[in-house]
Length: 89
Length: 398
Ligand code: SF4
Ligand code: SF4
Image (cartoon, each protein chain N blue to C red):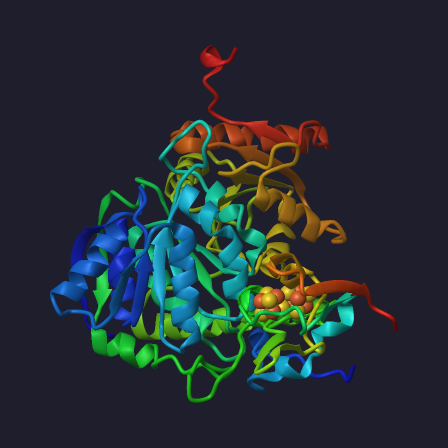
């Protein structure tokens, strides 16, 4: 990561810079959805603490740049459409 | 010299009037004995139209300091008051305020910490926050309480400092005691203290920014060092502001003020209201020909070791009187002074006396005893007991 200069009071005037930090890199497990089973209830969307799930016409889609693999979506899905699989790096 | 109005007021009223003269825009506060009169007065000033500010009634001291942080980050002058458990409950947020470099000013009615519950004078509350990165001032009188509030804003808001500050006035001995105070005129304080313009940033929805953002191991240490440099830089600013204050208002403040120290063999070092009693003790002992002097610490953070080093250089014995105690260690002033003087070649024998805890009275005779015990160490050429307790009620000990 490129080093930046520290500021007085740790003030960061580069608003929204957190979007550039891909927090998905910490993940060891990742979710996979079976859209055949998905009934578009969007519980996973509501529960995902990282906003890593998008609603689509077919059901849902993951933004794996920000999913940290917590597995909450898989736990909450009422029809077990989501499984957690080992992240291959 | 500026025109001033003579009033006879309580210590809390003095710090409140000092704060009001600084025209804070936001005053979040949670009342606590012995500081309650401060938020009471501030809300009266606002209700009476004498002060144009927002008073925020919060549900705890943690919230009070959180609200101070939020308000100050928007770039407005902010102050509060607290004491004892309140300062302890704020502890977490004190570090946030200083880390974000927000020059909030807090008046503290210095009071003991529980248990056992005790509402009386003791410096443990602010002393326990000494590492929080706040400037710390201690008043001897109500006048000093008022003046130090004004100085605290001016010093803390200096662009080379940008640090929050606490002004301690002793519980009851000052907070609830009526004394004569000279109150500066508003125009003169306005002149002395220009409106607060934060140079480092302010929270503004039109130009979003993050305060106190994430500091990983590659950066954190540098942030802390920058904070230390600001504290170091404040030494010169304090001297400059105290000079200017004297020029305008005619009252002299120093980080350390000496009294009859020039030819003194033994110097007694005090902080807060006990100084008045110590001065009387020094006067009486001087009449008996004892070569004793007094040094009063007004600024505890930054710790004024260069000044103390100079004061100590001629003395044979130094008695540090602490109104606080670190169990298993020493009083804070003694610890800091001992640490700062360890590499100085010419230094007196230094003894630590702890007294005045939880409102215990400190009498002239106690300072005489402190002098005698220090003299005995000097005559013996060694300090056998570095820490001694003064004015104990032996009959209540188990
Ligand atoms: S919780 Fe399961 S069924 Fe509901 S939207 Fe998510 S994947 Fe589909
Ligand atoms: S695993 Fe956790 S972070 Fe990733 S999409 Fe599911 S709920 Fe969100």
